[in-house]
Length: 150
Image (tube, rainbow, N blue to C red):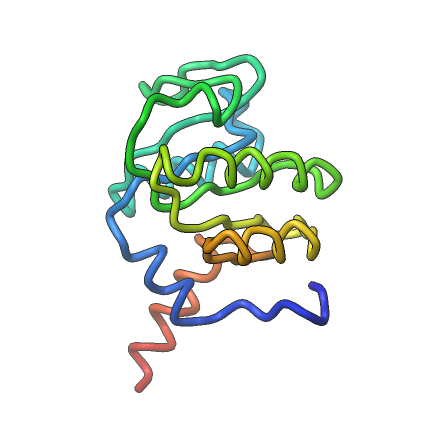
């Protein structure tokens, strides 16, 4: 993770606990991919609405898929979760920023191993919350256990 970014525990806790919709960029029907497993956990365990975004615009687990964030109909999105290569993050973040108000996007979550400090800075400047280089499923286990031990 970059030296200029530290994930905020309370932000992660709020984003995961919030019942809002998560757009999962990189989600396809490939059940071997982490995106599929994490999206399934978000949907079935955390009871979140999921919007798959993948170039093939596949329907995944009954959810309509879109090729790009710009293709998603107007709505209310809590988090855009990025399962993409770090070199692709900048373009996705720019698209999120361009659609932020129309989709009411609150945050960008870059998955474990996904980092782009410059894109994170642009997102924060646009008023988005940013989590980088971690997985909500992993964080939720730790945050939940942390709260139980107090």
